[in-house]
Structure formats: structure tokens, C-alpha cells
Length: 412
Image (cartoon, rainbow, N blue to C red; front, side, top):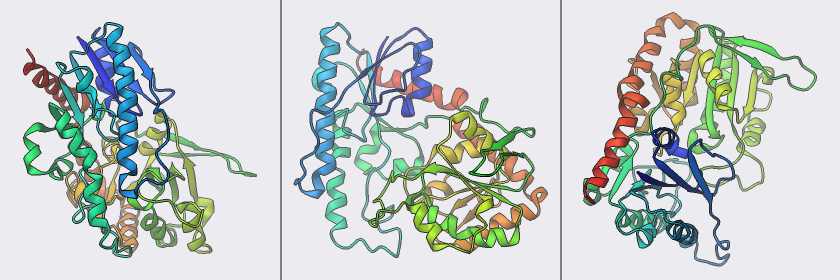
């Protein structure tokens, strides 16, 4: 079988599926902009848009023009593939950057499965979620226009994949019959608790490194980037109370200083700098450790030594890291927002707190640190929740393979 993956940052959500198909001796090709990310058995070809977006284009249309440029670059790469004799039996691609919009112009008889993460709404999701930032009337037309890329992708595809029920529910009802809820999967054989886990905290300037281990008072927080969409301000504002109540607790923070979602601060500072300035004098910074972005194996060690893991998010795309933390047996304190509530049941397999309520976040963390034995069952149930619904090998990978079979069955 010839399989074509299209993802700006391949392998991305297709890591496990592409590995599996390549290991089964299928002919697998990927189109990507990412300079690394090669997988054994997968032929990865790079593409680049011919130019940048137009500086003076209407701000509603910046993302759309970027998507068109990506889609055109993918078409050029696909035409080269076709001329070389490669015709896919099935195509899978992420819709978020426009790459899959024109694929059927090149391979009209190849079924296309799109990965759909988020349909934008003026109300009930991320836009207007923060009460301190009233988006104004312009948010409605802008958000509606932002979905042009979603609609192009939905019309181009034969089937679509959504990772969670809540994300699926964001899509208009008229399109849901072609969408399937299939998560990418968590490798629970690899991501698991380790009571003997240790983590060597890197030495800061003028200091020596020291070892942290499972059972220590360790509060963890993970995000791709430290920003409001992932609740970084609320987390930071919870720390003074946590440190006052538990002065020996170490705080481990993983994430970069860029902005993945939403706008970067307008004053040129990072969100980390802004929060540190705001909280100056109220934090013991010797026990607040910013680790940046870590290799995956090191990231897992951080989860395995965690006493309490805090995960906060706007009503938006759910992070892999929350599910991985649960699979690693972490005690989760999550935000009381729809994507999190789909997975965490308060007091059963984790704890929930208000997204904008640092006092409640601190209260939940402090209680867990004070009496870890009282919450031990939640750790086990957190892992079991992931095994039952998001396990890679037993649930999600078979689900993705069934999705491929369904898409191909209409072309037999």
C-alpha cells in the first residue's frame, strides 16, 4: 500500500501511525516543512511556500493566504511524486495549515483523511474566554472568516479525524457525519509510573545540581510555551500560596517562551518575564525551576517524579501532555474547562479548579502535598482512564487503521 502523509511538522500527530505502517513494509511518503523528524522507513520530502504572505493583506485573510501558499507548495511536491510514479492508495494530512486543500487535484482517486483539531466560535470556546479581554464586535466576523480554511478542508476530504469528543462537537452538525473521533494515542507501555524514578535538576549559575525523586514534594507544569492559553499566569499566581504552605516543595516548569496560541505580549517581554516581574518578592526562586523544552525521555522522568501536576487550558485543543501525565500516574489538578472535563472527573481520577482562580489551584495542590496518601487512588484511576480510552496499541492505533480501511472502502 502506498501511503502519503502531509503535515507541516511531520510526524506530529502521525508519529505512531507512520511508524506502524512503515514497519509493516508499506511504502510511506511524508511531505513536511520540518527540517528534522525523519522516521525509519518513511521517505520525507520537504516543501516550502514560494513567498511570504502579503504584508498589507486584510488581517482576516492572513491565515488563509498562508494556507493557500502552503497548499500550492504541497501540490508542486505532489506533482513531482506523481511524475516519479508514486500514487497513494490513501492520503492523510493535517488541515490546520492548508496543506491538504488541493491534494485531490493531483490525486483525485486517492481517498483523503483530514485531521481536524478545532472549529472556531465567537462564543463558547477560546474567543472571549478571558473576561479581562473583551474581544469586541470585530471578533465575530474575524472568527467566522478564520473558518474558511476549515470549510475548504472539510469539502476536500473524504473523511475527517477529530482527537476528542469536545473538539468534534465544535464542528457544524452538517459535517459531523464525515468526522470520526480517533485520538492519536498514548503509549501507556512506555508512559507509566516509576516509583524509583529520579530527575537530576540542572545546576544554575554558581549552584550545584541535585537529585529529585518520586515521593519528593514536586509540583510540575508543562506546556509547549508558557502562555495564557495554557493557564501559565494562573499557575504562576498560585505559587506564592503553595510555597508559603509547603516551603520545601520544588516547582518544575517545562515550556518555551514563545507564543503558540494567541498574541505575544505587546511590550516585548515574554509571559514568563511578565509574571516574574508581577510576583517579584513573593516567590522563592531557588525552588522554582524553568527547564525550557526537554527531550521526551527527560520529560517523562519529570512526570514520574511529580507529586502534583497542574494542567490548565482555555476551551481549546487538549494537550497530549495532560494525557501523558495521567498515564504516568500523576495526580492531576486540571482546569474546570470543557476539554479537561471530558477526561478528568473531579475527586475520582483527578482534581479540578477554576481556570482563573489561582487560590483554588493552590488549595488543591497544597492539600495533595500535605496528605499524598489520601489521593493515591486518584493516581491509579488517572492511569486507568488513559488505558481504557486513549491507549495507543489497544485502542487508538487500531482506530486509525479502521479509519484508513473505511476511507479506502469507498474507492474499491
